[in-house]
Image 1 (tube, rainbow, N blue to C red):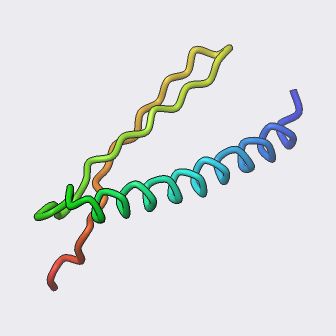
Image 2 (image 1 turned 30 degrees about the vertical axis):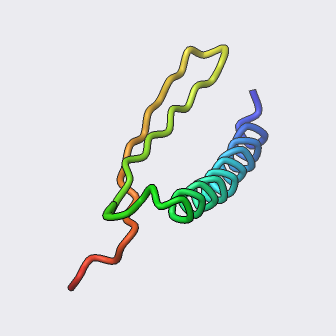
Length: 72
């Protein structure tokens, strides 16, 4: 196994995941706002499930996406 090759491909994959996920979330939030489905909603729960075939990896990340800036 070539660790450098794996590392480069992993970084490319994660960059693609991050960029496309952000775009899809922003578009979906925009549609929901336009349709009035987010009235009064201050945050959204988010979950990402990563699976890698061949090594039986399943990894879940959860978080909250704030729609409003919290008062300071």
